[in-house]
Image (cartoon, rainbow, N blue to C red; front, top):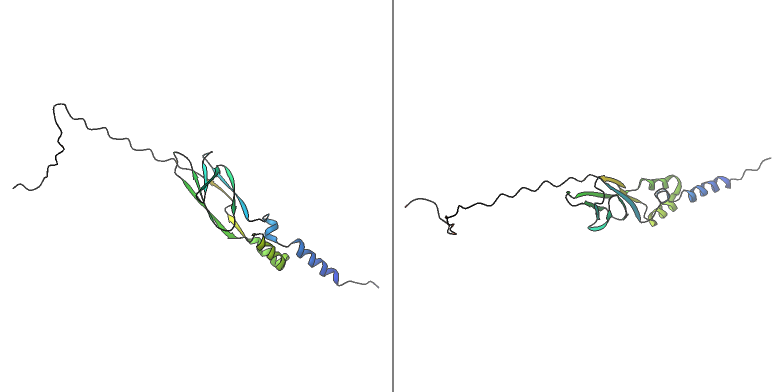
Length: 158
């Protein structure tokens, strides 16, 4: 007669919990920072993240997942373009309901993988600044005429 061990399914489930723990951490490579790529049709444009210059476009910047970020792409002769990189709940956290369980959720929280940044890649098109208006030529006063700095008041005749 064959003896069946009841502990084998339990070991398998525990093994899956350990292997699948921290679904969001495993899938998104964990860590407090996330790499975000900014592409621009104007190569060499300056990337400014949260008010601080961080490099040139095209470029990849490492941003914390704790907050959303304001990214500006700046180039001389072009209007500044702005992109908001938002903080979103990482859908891979829900993988813990299937595989990771409470252990996986704790790992995701500790590794700060419960949230992700979106978009993680964006392309920015910079628009050229409008041409400056041409200055009007200075008025030419014929010689022999004098100009007076006196202001003449106009109104009713008395």
